[in-house]
Image (cartoon, rainbow, N blue to C red; front, side):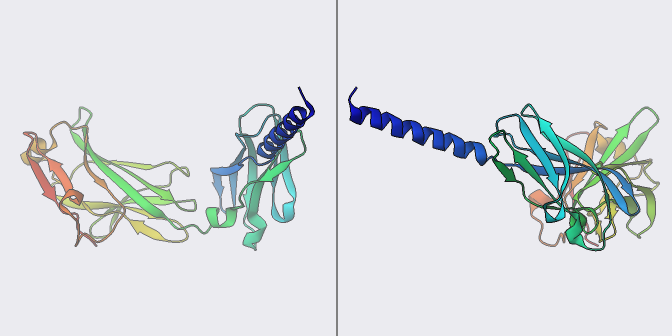
Length: 265
């Protein structure tokens, strides 16, 4: 092979090495958290760092304000690194900012986005509240079961089963990230119920759902198979302009469909 050919191969090899090195030093690093315990002025959280594109072994560092290293862990596989951390409420939100740093054996490192734990854990409003009402019969007669959960919001979140008149019938405070589950007997008459979710920032309600009376024969005809939902509720909003498809659907035992528009408060 002549000199020009050798020069060409050398340039290609250098280019390939440079590209491989660039890919190695620019992986994407993610940061996520899960609340394990809630205290009056603190939270125990699990923070996870992950750089799936980086070549192991990878040194993960959890860093806080002013780039101070809080914890470090070496992972020899492509699995994420997890850090168990007790976070207390500080006077300044800036003191509760964390990020992950992933470093490879070449010495290159990359940082994740900043995770502002103050706003996540203490000042994030409840949002996207969803509730599902279901009729079930476990042998002792029909019962109404409601599952209720907000997609986001600072813990602790208190969930309540609320009547149309505002009376709180049942209340739960499940672990963060878990739904609240309520079970109750249908009343003697039809009644409206909704789920309420509240934290230290705000309160949100689901739409009202009409629950038929338990003794009514129409309820037995209407419920059909008892293991089917009455109505899956979207986050609360005015129903004045709902389309036909957005109305709650009630199904009878013979297949007839009855539609009931959820009332706005």
